[in-house]
Length: 378
Image (tube, rainbow, N blue to C red; front, side, top):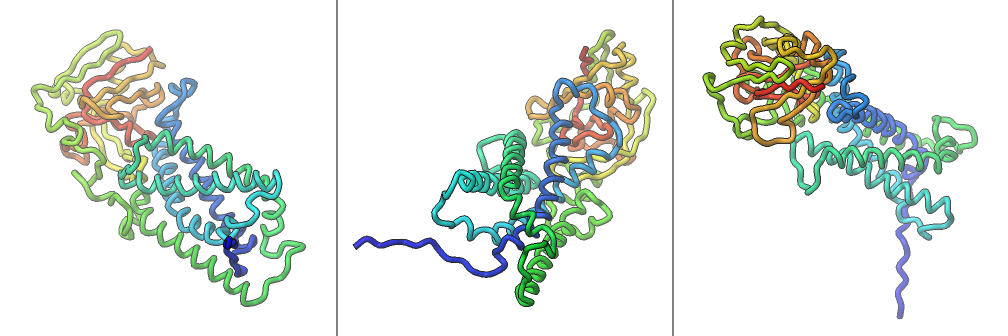
């Protein structure tokens, strides 16, 4: 005797399109902010040739703001995504699986959208704690999947536009009035989801918005913890650098008039003070007081053309960010320093002793530590 297995049957008004649309509006805002700020971060770290020499160095705290928003909205999207999936999961078991071409497109867009929407915040959250339990490189895959999610979302919105429009407003024309109990249940659900979003945001956003740092419970970085009260992602030991002896250090500036400087000679040059943040892709940021030699002065001494780009090379022998490049807007900004001191003290080895780059509106991964060479690029 052949047994027939029937698909599960779900009930409850909170699994309806009205609830899904209400949560979807908030989730859409989070995804839009994350996509826009993620695009900014990607361009800042991997600029296309057209923009390589034109990335702006102002506003000074621009990257701190955009990346802080990216991580905050990404974390806030997690309870929204869970709530959204809870409201729509009965539809994943609809039968027959495909009823028409339009329905097939809808199901395909949903499958890609759900997979990508789960992958993006989960992988981003794991990136904030620098845990990578996968064999691929996080940055290019995270970026590629973001575009995949964006395309699937556009397709999904196009297919579901009539239904979304019918339930967009609280009292849309043509929709049935809800019984009082159902209306109360929906408001309670939405209030609980909003409270969850607020809770995870308040307990993590202090890693970049320092006025709320005392509320940090779950953020992977405390902006006050670290050598010289500044966090680090990569220590001198992890980079294989250790502490570099003063007498062995040389800064090589390779340009039309190349030269080299000892550490004492660097210290003897005019020193400048700036207040700039370190803002990392993991979402944490912290402003600090830096003292050092302006990059523009070092380049002028080497005879660099006004619009030349600069390659900054660290003394570490390996690592994805041991080499970075700056366009002329950053290289010739008077706030861009080869820093020798942090908060009035000699740099700690974990902060790049004896010299590191610090520049405005620049990702922390590109604020190269243990700088040993500056190369003028034509």
